[in-house]
Length: 340
Image (cartoon, rainbow, N blue to C red):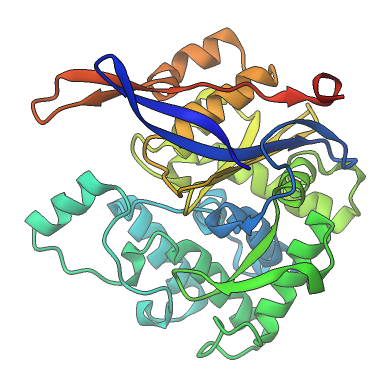
């Protein structure tokens, strides 16, 4: 049973709560701490993008096209479709010699509601680079171009590209491909269902790849560096992923996934963390939940926690912007010692 992670108050009453599960694992596969079910099976959704993007490097694609850190970072992103995001994706497509409409991610408004309204008010003409997944798709298309694979059906789970990516994710998360449940993500590529434990393990190894073979080690280090050098690509202006990376100065690899999933790898601390909010809410649960977990794991300094203060506890406001309640965490991770 998922446990209550977040309460939402209005005046003197708690009128809503959000349940969830979370687990912290080291790269050797030992569970360090948890709340709820550490082996809950769910889809990793877009939290898996950094692991999927490893294939761009492993395949030799990144080297051939000399992708910059900014370009690699946006391949790991769920970006807001701001101008600099769209320009970066368009630049990748120009490098690989394909038109924008080759991207099969769909054409969507920004996942940032305020920026989406701004685009609507401007009568902005959307194209696939607006999609939060366009960077990932640009990386996939680049790999198809490099390896000579079809670009017209690259989203299909039977496509050689998707089989290669599945193998990469299976390897770093230490889970047999046959045990990964395949679904279709919002952007039409395969999405992977697996235990939170394996997601956390994958991110622990991603951030601390010293024991991996040289090829994987180099790819993990390159992507980790890219995300931290260009955190603005991973989400966007005032986005939680962007601010979490920016304020922790190269300590984390952190990525949001749809339906309340969040994964983190902690460099030099040998920790991977995976979170699932049961009801799929992200707007008011992810910041407080992530920061409570990181605080419990003693990952962040006081200065880092203070710089992220606005995400630790949120205001519940009315239509006039008046504070009428709070959104706050009500849990602590249980260590293995505490649970035995």
